[in-house]
Length: 63
Image (tube, rainbow, N blue to C red):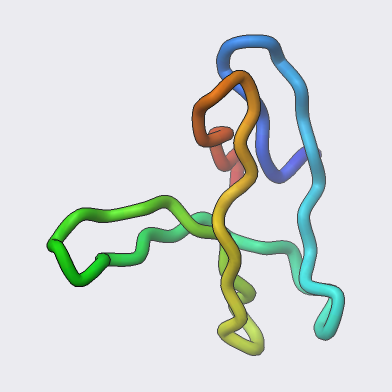
């Protein structure tokens, strides 16, 4: 099962942590200005990255 899927074109990706091999989970990060951005984070080591994008928008997390 894919980790992320684009709602517009259907492109899908699997995303896992290279250090822990754990599947990344969807999350949000609050910025200093109060806005939120979608992120992908490792549930084991707490590493995080900006969530993947496709067709100019964040891909949906299926986990």
